[in-house]
Image (tube, rainbow, N blue to C red; front, side):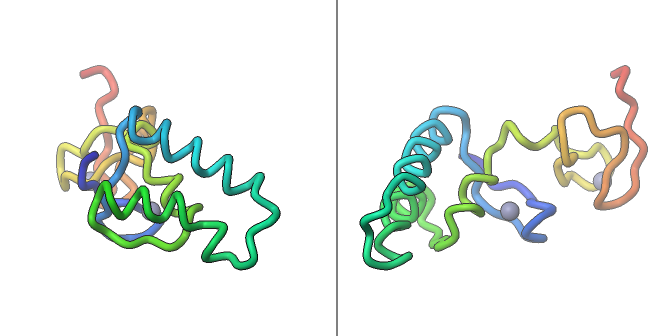
Length: 103
Ligand SMILES: [Zn+2]
Ligand SMILES: [Zn+2]
């Protein structure tokens, strides 16, 4: 895991690497298929607990947890250090820095 700026949440969050994401994704799938839970909290519990135990951060929104995947984001901007929105982004959405994709 790694702390990265999330442009969706507009704050720094702990993001999951591919091994951690694989587990979270599995829990997310089980959550989707779980139609017997009596409440949203109970349905979300496994993935929320997993993220909390891993990162020490409480995020009760599984959709938010699942988009905090390091591989979804680009490398850090050379100018401001925030990650590009995607690996192929041609400019930084945070500061407007134009990226030289030929580096
Ligand atoms: Zn986010
Ligand atoms: Zn930037």
